[in-house]
Length: 154
Image (cartoon, rainbow, N blue to C red; front, side, top):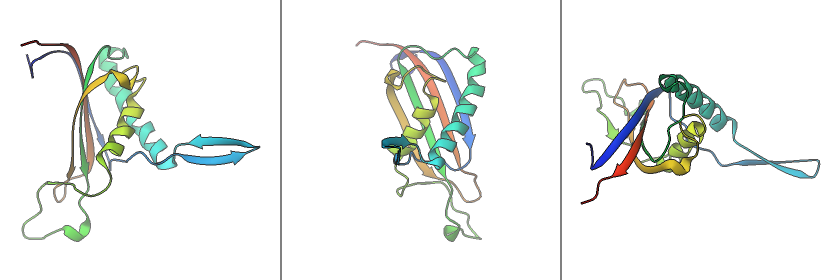
């Protein structure tokens, strides 16, 4: 038992590269109709995440997670080169600048919908953090989804 809850299947994977925040929707007007679309950067990031999620889902024969889900994410954002030190390399630090944590989460949640789980309404708990990578550490996104079977009553 973990955290007062019974756990089910767990899926974890890591995506190499700089985390991308969900951009604002873009609009175009063609033939009198307004069309809404994702910015290219967000669309490409979602496609990359979707591919990594689909690869990880092979462990479950592609069957999506059912029921309530605990979603965990850690976003490692590359340290600016201007902060580098030669003698004592910088360790990991909390990232208190942009991009916003909720926009980073939106990108991952949107990309994993219909691949890992059927609908993001299944996510009942989120644990997440945004850090600045240590000097020399590559940027990353670590994600895990775990089925929560029931809440233990006191």
